[in-house]
Image (cartoon, rainbow, N blue to C red; front, side, top):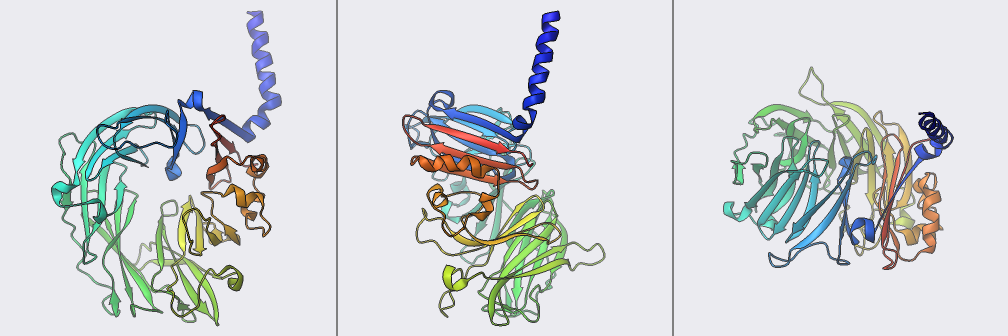
Length: 450
């Protein structure tokens, strides 16, 4: 008993002295032995975590037909590394992963034939279903996006040759539901955009707070509009119309919109809509970011804040081509909890090139947290460019704890960064793969906010 108490005391003493370091950094190493082969793929599940794929064949992670089944060893981690799972599944086609609040979804697709496995976050399979979208006249080219709801429904977002929206779905958790069925959507009869010269078609924004959200754009002209608005419709899980809202003109009188489109996104954490577009103001190129929320006393959404930013040194970075021919793409919006990230990105010449973009980060109140021209974004890092950064285009990373860890990998030509994540609280995650055939390991670091 005395020995047990002494060991317990020494253990607690060790924790007390090393607790700060242990809490500051977590490190996980997966190599050929512990991973069961080579790491051939990384799937980012957004706020729900990530999956690393290992198998015995280097640079192979998909089967090619029923006679070429491959066994993959999947490692799931939540972004804070508190949830972990390891599961093995044989696949025969193209693999993709999705996640919702309750489940992980693995798609194994051969042409139009889908095998969908529904797992919980321990890796336990709770449903397995086979669907053929060809049975309802669909092919892969017609599918714009796939959504998975918190209640386990698989939703196909489809646009026909006239750009009209069609929704197909299947309840994966219902073993009796074995067909992909088109949903008869009751589109709103009201048209608050009718006074506008250009009215677009309905498109799907996503699923949030238990509702499907559709939107339709209106503008005073199809090209170079200076007035723009959105008609937003909320539907329940059965696609019954629940509520309609109008997001009215967000371009101010002294702003002229550049390009044809605006970016439009739902922030699930804030339960508000973020819109952004390129503008010209006082002869200078820039972009606006506006945040709109619901007004309980009105069907018109309420403006919470509106921010404007100039393009930084466009002559050097060429984020916008002012040649009279090119049509600039709208900014890209992403979310980390209440944080809003807006990126104005220069087009890349190939998929291996890391994008140059002006990266702007704001909090839920519209307070500016970061605004600079950068290489890439928070999701990935070209380690070679980072190691020889002479233009300070990785300043967002140099101030983070992970910077000290990344530097030693600059001496290793076989290393690459699979993912970088900084959550809404400032906790950092970086995943590094060393492809050296003799090393073959993935190292996961997590740093808690100081």
